[in-house]
Image 1 (cartoon, rainbow over the protein chains, first blue to last red):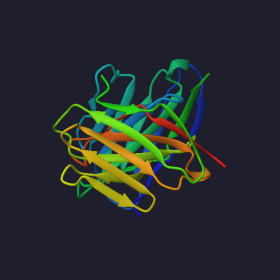
Image 2: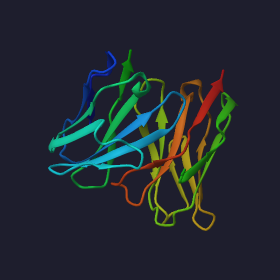
Image 3: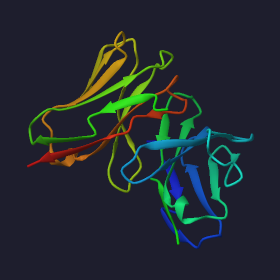
Image 4: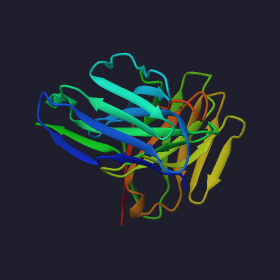
Length: 115
Length: 112
């Protein structure tokens, strides 16, 4: 079946540094990918929607200059957390819509810890 | 603003019992209602989904009941097993390929 892969699964970075999380669709082309953030014991909150070859659409309250999203190909979207702070520590999950537009597949998530 | 309201927040069911989780929505444009299961530290996995043209969908031990007029839908887990212990999220979207609006989740514990 379709698989969405996220890398890294866990990352620890120092405050003030930037960290990049990759989201890949392994056996289908994803024209659209979604990035979510999930705090412990809470729901998934949509951060942004990225379409291949165009700028991401950010949800209200999400800083686009802090959370840089690039969707340069039909199989890869990246989320870069810039100038990370401890409050950015969270579980980041991506999902991808297959080219038929009918199904969304979720990645396994990436744990970010900022120390 | 939470577009999908989910209850209960937590649920304890004995093995073999029926687990029932309820969700309600306001946006009548929603036409795709999936349920996701999430284990700790993992991404959500699609369990079952329904569209408004049917009132019930069953897949194995999992059943979605949908009430369009009440704008409510629910997940029933029959013969609940300890391995079903996880967090369950309902969601809704305007189209199956669009961004999902998630409920707050229900933490299910099935006791032996």
